[in-house]
Image 1: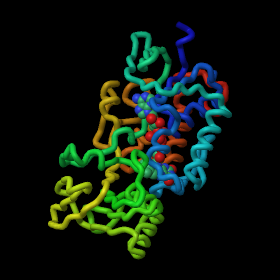
Image 2 (image 1 turned 90 degrees about the vertical axis):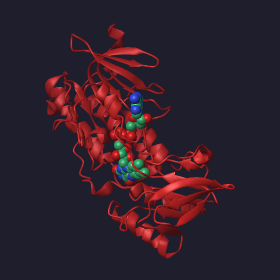
Image 3 (image 1 turned 90 degrees about the horizontal axis):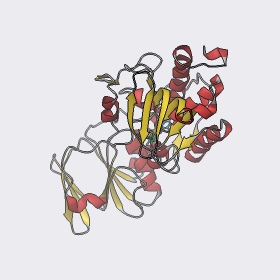
Image 4 (image 1 turned 30 degrees about the horizontal axis):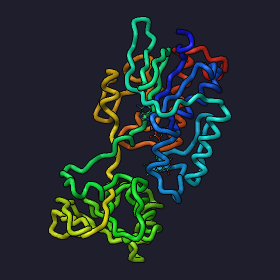
Length: 332
Ligand SMILES: Cc1cc2nc3c(=O)[nH]c(=O)nc-3n(C[C@H](O)[C@H](O)[C@H](O)COP(=O)(O)OP(=O)(O)OC[C@H]3O[C@@H](n4cnc5c(N)ncnc54)[C@H](O)[C@@H]3O)c2cc1C
């Protein structure tokens, strides 16, 4: 069994999971006893999938505090630089990441160890960190999407080729603005439908970029509109708004945010509040030995990469104080 016995199992290889494993190595935990499971074929799946290629990755995303507490820190970067930074963290710290392995079940045993099952293997561990983010399941609209238009509706900009078409983005946050900028750069005619009149959820850069696009007539913003329903009109999708107007487009992208993968946490008996899962100041959940780092515990205000890095640092100190033998005294 000792071959399958770990000090720490981390679920999810995004910024939170990778930085936590790096913190653990830095704290002096034996790196061969730390394992990260990632359900995708590569790390940082959410960044690869949801960020437009030419996005500026900002250190103080959504006004979050960019001050770094631990060993990892992101400066304003390109998407490629951000991914390289995370690649380097995995290589430099010789982290073991098992790809294409979704964690399906975690069970606490009588001896306080956890048994973790993926679709492929079963291991045992003293502690667990859940770092699965909130983007795995994007929010869906509350009206039905007719079967015949499903192939023309999307929840990100990478699941289809968007070039020289007419595209409607639905949403009003940073992702909505970034999708508009990306679509415009790819030569599409862009529409944006937002249910409010003012964009209060966007950071300044995204708001200014969107308004500049509107001024240059590169985006038609349909303010205070609520989609009533979609139907196929020839090759196009007819989008009717409750307010009476409509728009005819080739494709629709929903940017309605993500939700916490509640079912996964509930299966672990983790207490939930209106704000999301309940965690201590050191990111330990209501279940002793299970920590929630990164977006999953960032609450309604949402997370960022540096916020995820900082949560890993704080959590690591608590892992060392309460559960693990950490050779680096600064963590104890
Ligand atoms: C469009 C967009 C733009 C953004 N721009 C910025 C920005 O400019 N600057 C910034 O700081 N932040 C930005 N963010 C936010 C930032 O991406 C997140 O805060 C950050 O990625 C959170 O990291 P995480 O590790 O908690 O989660 P994620 O990055 O979501 O990583 C979670 C990982 O867990 C894996 N996973 C999920 N379930 C399982 C499972 N059961 N088993 C195994 N693996 C699993 C996923 O495949 C994924 O790789 C942006 C987000 C979006 C959507």
